[in-house]
Amino acid sequence: MRIISLHCDYIKFKPVKKAIKNAEEIKENEEKEILNPLVILTAVERGDNDEIIREMVSSVQKIAKDVGADKVVLYPYAHLSSNLSDPETAKEYLVEAESALKKLGFEVVRAPFGYYKEFELKCKGHPLSELSKEFRNKSQLEKEIDSKKIEKKEKPEKISSLLKEASRSKLDTSKLKENDHRIIGQKLDLFSFNESSPGSVFWHPKGQIIFNELVNFSRELQSKMGYKEVATPIIFDNKLWKISGHWDHYKENMFITEYEKGEFAIKPMNCPGHMLLFRAKTVSYKDLPIRFSEYTSIHRMELSGVLAGLFRLIHFHQDDSHIFCSFEQLEAEIVSIVELINIIYKKTFAFNKIEVKLSTRPDNFIGDINDWNKAEEILKETLKKTKMNFQIKEGEGAFYGPKIDFDVEDSLGRKWQCSTIQLDMQLPKRFDLKYIGGNNKKYEPLVIHRAVFGSIERFIGVLLEHTNGALPLWLSPIQVRVLNFTDRNVNYAKKVIKQLTDEIPYLRVDYDFRNTTINDKIRDAELEKINYIIVLGDKEEKANSLAVRERGKKPVFNVKINVFLSELKDRIKNRN
Image (cartoon, rainbow, N blue to C red; front, side):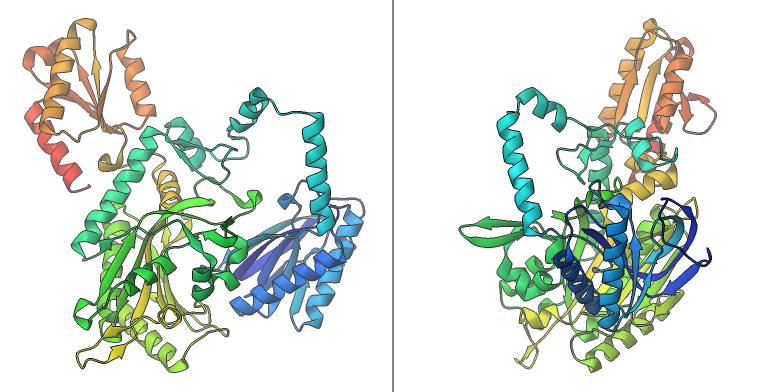
């Protein structure tokens, strides 16, 4: 059995028509809306039994407790598996799961089985809001192992067949919209995916430039704001994850491995490593605030059915930061983070519509209620001072502290939850973090978890669709392309390229000297979304000038090289 659990603000669904002959009978095809549910997308597989159902119900009970949900929606979702049970068995087990959950005190809604349904949901943004799990019994696993052994004996693997399988990377574009970032990425030669490493990006040279430029931009801004970049290991002993609470709350989404008979896990987030860094030396109140920043990769186990290009990955990077401060410093730190978010989203990338949500204490909160009240009040007052309109989402904070989420609206009117500020009053206690105050006594710092891009890969996907691949000059893999009108203009073109790169060594410039028409060359450059196309013919060579075509505009003739260089420098430096 496979499930995806989604903690949602709401889900709406409506049966449209029967998908199978023996679909269960329903009275009417009316739309249902359930508020604040835990939605369980479920695929019952061949070989599932009562033991699996009990395990699934127990898991749902634990997740519901962790997220503070008292409503459960069981939603048949066959797309999660290619090894589905027969319909009658699947329906029987879903009814059994419904009954078991009701006995545990949950309000349960089960979407009708065997129908095509239209549905809409809004997933919450906390760390436990999206989880995927797989349940297998012993006999299923033994059969799989045995069949693999038999298959191995009967069909010895050949290098050629392994290579063929490992090289599969074809993108099925039939169900994708034209502006889908996966299509844009393929057309512009930015990245690809390969089944040899599911849910991971293979960055091509041009795509890696975009990734690096974003990270460099973030580093530059954060350095000015007092952040110190660090790097922590990828794999940690399970003792660390038990201290942080991830072993209890997040283990199913972590990659587990063994080393010298001990269990280790690949990190799904950077928090515990940063706690150890804080503990590495004695900290004085004069050292606060301490702002650790990290860009290393993280891994989260996901079912293959939920992977979606750059938007949902197993392996990705966050512009992650943890700020250690006192209550007195909290307001200034939040204001500084909001300022950083505005610089990136509004000033630099022109995401002018941003929704701000403050999520408060959930039912399953841990810690002192007085600390929660104080922290929530500070966050409310701070947001008011930043003059940002915000809505309060009562009871939707993380179990360890209140949080602020930022949803940006793109050029297509879609909303994306990108930046987040989460206040943590629990990890400092669990890791026994202390700093020495002015009176020589020990005090516990607050921790702010903060990501601005969020997943860098996901942000690139959003940006590609927001701009339809037409990236700003400073971010473009190729900023300038030089074209020759005829073969006799090649030497002048080479001279112009040298002048450009001598004056701006970091400029990304290439050329197209192919023996084809100038219109072909211009069309190809436009399809590649290149910012500036320079065309050089006899007139330009004689006048020692340029014909410059800026992306989306008409060509400008007789442009002096020093004027063009000045414009380039200014636009790249100021990230216009």
